[in-house]
Structures are given as structure tokens and as C-alpha cells.
Amino acid sequence: MLTKAPKGTKDILPSQIYKWDYVEKVFREICRKYGFQEIRTPVFEHTELFARGVGDSTDIVEKQMYTFDYAGRSLTLRPEGTASVVRAFVENKLYAGGQPSKYFYEIPCFRYEKPQSGRLREFHQFGIESFGSPDMLADAEVIALGADFLAALGVRQAELHINSIGCPDCRPAYRELLTDFLRPKYDELCDTCRSRFHKNPMRILDCKSPICQEAVKGAPVMLDHICGPCSGAFEALKGHLDAFGVAYHVDTGIVRGLDYYTKTAFEFVSGNIGAQGTVCGGGRYDGLIGELGGPPTPGVGFGLGIERLLLVMDAEGFDIPAPAGADAFIAYMGDDCKAAGIALSKRLRSAGLHVEMDVHGRNIKGQLKQADRAGARYAIIIGEDELGQNRASLKNMASGEQRLVDIGDLESCIQAGAADAT
Ligand code: ATP
Ligand code: MG
Image (cartoon, rainbow, N blue to C red; front, side, top):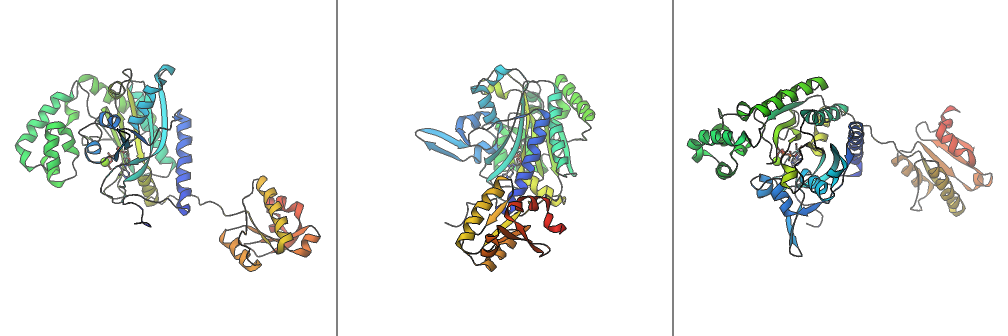
């Protein structure tokens, strides 16, 4: 137990972290270009926020939340990002600053699920939220940002699927139609879906059980039953996506796993990483901000799973540049040389170089081995005699070439790669 991380969690080790740094840098840069600003919210919130915000009848709230009591309050580790951002928006009266308000975040999320490839209990999301605009251009902008981001990371084979899941005006009538269709099949449904039948029958369309998938074949689809305004909005969305040059497939099967969505629902799906192929999912949630106590404000956003993103990038062969090794490794012989090495390391680091030095008291052979392990471009060897002349040996680790250099010149030699030239 002591040396095993909890099931469904993963360490991100130093050997992998550069990939995370890389995608994070690209994400931040794209968000900057689209005018989204970073927001950071707490890892846990009052449980009611998710019960209300994500929806009581969703799998997330019914079965997957990490909830604990503290001092008489029920708290929950966030299973997704939107509800928290809405809470912060309302609590800090950010709506007073004029609309749209556009936010991005990178967060760990927690869901008690069956761990498998691309499905963890602690996972990470990039997310964006655009609050304030009822216009489908806001949806298209959110989707275009997602498409740009994936393209920048070499993901060519994630298809964009879009759908409209209607609004409170047209969904009730559709819900009737769907329940009428499913009623004769009620006994065939899985336990979860029998309860969904009463609470939220649209979720049955999304059930992964083969029996339920069979039962919903031929069911009426929301897209055929949306009202005039929803239908106009969907046409507008497609037009805006065309204008952005973003390709899409209309997929009537998309029903998002969270209750708050209205009109636009979309997913970027990759066929390259097995069953958990949805890299990014999002949509419009016009009722949510009002529902959570804010002034009625429309919103649209997405959540993008970082672990899945890295799997897709790997599957598509995108080579994230690995970080360079140390610029120099300082090896020394004896105490005087050690003090000179420390002073030198300080000087080279303040010049911006990545410098490492032995902190074990190893002999010179051991230190040079360490220089190799650090991937150092140069080893600087400080010996008594050379130090007497204020010089040190500069060894090019790739070629093995070595020469004496004035200590004062080391910085410029390393920066210019001068040892290579002589
Ligand atoms: P799925 O269909 O895979 O269950 P979801 O609809 O529950 O996903 P969202 O709540 O929309 O997912 O979250 C957005 C994104 O976060 C997903 O598209 C996926 O990339 C990622 N994600 C969701 N759940 C997990 C998980 N348990 N482990 C890893 N990534 C996840
Ligand atoms: Mg899920």
C-alpha cells in the first residue's frame, strides 16, 4: 500500500513532464491569441455546486464524486471545471466587467470510474469557457480554438462531431417521443438506464452497454425535433465553422454527459486510442449561470482530457522536442577547486546557463560519468595546477576534445560553442 499510488492515479515523472510543459505552453499561447484569460479555482467545492451544476441524474453526480465531510460541510473534489468557473464568475461578480468573459484553465479532475486506458480517477483537463454571448459565433470560436490547438499539436485525425441537443422549449416534447419509443423496451434496459428512463431518458442514448445500444437503435433523434430558433442556431453554427475553415460531421448521437448543455454539443474524437476516443467535449449551457444563482447569462465551453491528448499525439507520431541536457558540468579536484567551482557555477547560472556540479564528493572519474548522465554539452574540469593559472579544462562531451580556457572566458566559450571551433 505504502509504495503504491491509489488505483486510477498516475505519477507524472520527470522523464515525461516535458510533454506536459509543451502542451501547456501551446494551450496558453492559443488561449492568449483568442483572448481567453486564465482562472484558477479551488480543487474542492461545496457538493451542492456539482449536484446542481452538473446535474443530479448524471453518472458523475450519482456515482463518481469524491465527497467528504469536513466540519459539518459536504465537500467534493471537482469532477469537471465549468461549475467552479461559473461559481467564481457569480461570486466575484465578474459579470459586471462586461461580456463576453472568456476564461481558460488547466486542472486536475476527480471521478470515481473504472480505470482503463484513457480513463483515470484523477485526470487533467484543459478547459475554456466563454460567457455572455447567445450568438453561435461564440460557439464557433470555442470550437475553432480547440481545432487550432489540436492542429498545433500535430493531431490530424481527430474528427469534430457536432449536434444540437435543443433547449428547454423543444426538449420536453422530444423527451416524450423518446420515452414513448423506449417504453416497450424498458425491461431490456440496464439497471442504470431503467432509472434514467424516469429521470433523464436522453442519457440512455449515451449508455455504453451493448444491450442499451441495441435498444436505442432507431430511436427518434433530437436534431429532427429541435424548435425553430435551435434549428436556426445550428445552421448559423455550421456557417461560422465553414467561415473558420473548421471541418465537422453532424452526429445526432452526441448527448453530453452533463445536464447543463443546450443547443450546441460537440466532441473531437480520435479513432487512434481505442474506446476512450473523445479527446475534447463541450457545448453551450445557457441555463447554467442563472441556475447557479447568477444573472441569466449564456455560456459555451469545452473540457479537453490531457492524458488522452498525449495518447493521441503519441499515436499520431508527434515528436515533442525533449529538453536539452546541461550546458556544462563542473568537475573539480580538491577543496580549493570545489570553492572555485561553486563560484563558477553561480556565475554561469546567473548568465542563464544550465550548470550542474557534483554534490557527492565523487572522484574525478565519477564526476565525469555524472556529466555524461546529465547529458552535458561540456565538462569543465578544475584542477589545482590550472586553477593556479586561473584556467580550467573545457571538454566537449560529444567530441571528447579538451582544451585549457581562462576561467573568465568560460561563459562566452560555452555560449558560442567556441570549443568546437578550435
Ligand atoms: P467520456 O465520454 O469519456 O466518459 P465525458 O463525457 O465524461 O467523457 P467530459 O466530462 O466532457 O467527458 O470531460 C471532457 C474530457 O475530459 C473528455 O473528453 C476526456 O478527454 C476527458 N475525460 C473525462 N473523463 C476522464 C477520465 N476519467 N480520465 C481521463 N480523461 C477523462
Ligand atoms: Mg464520462
